[in-house]
Length: 243
Ligand SMILES: [Zn+2]
Image (cartoon, rainbow, N blue to C red):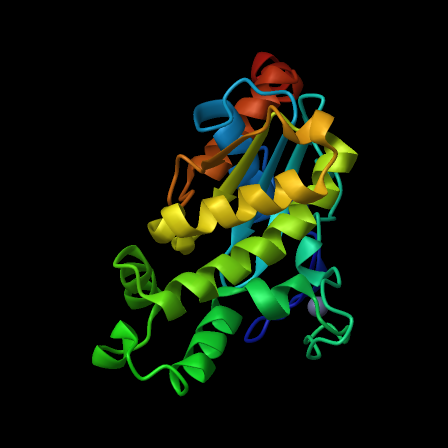
């Protein structure tokens, strides 16, 4: 539902229905993280798995969940809003109004802010020699820079706490991480997995496969996944047969 669209006369416009009416074609609309999760299960790193958690750490933090082979919130407008779940009761205020949301400590923007603050007290960091970006932070971490490693590991621990709770709820076979921080996977992934193993039910966490998403950016694969899913569930096949 497009509630408002700056520059256009649109108010509370159902996007899929409107596009379908204008084009005469079936239209499928899904949140980008949910569509990416479906794409990974059909073509990528979680191919064939029945229970999957895919977390995306970027400018925002969100997740897609496949439970029993079905995408959670598939037909609704909801998302698995882990980014706005409180991880630190004494943390700073989030734009959603809550305090200490996961997004305030684990989004890429908050990560760069934290790294910039820590740089002041760490004069020997490699990051003083270049502009502070996600790429330079990940490269410094790969070179063993302590500040860069600590900052990325702290994101991994925060995300791991959230994932440990989700593991106890969904008992997934696969956990995928889609993030520009995968450039420093050797730092990020051990931090995530060690926290999951410490905090989730051992019977559930013991066999989990933690991996990066196969696609760095989902591009149009999310859309392709929605169409393939509609073929599998029969909706689009019936449409095609009806001409
Ligand atoms: Zn929030």
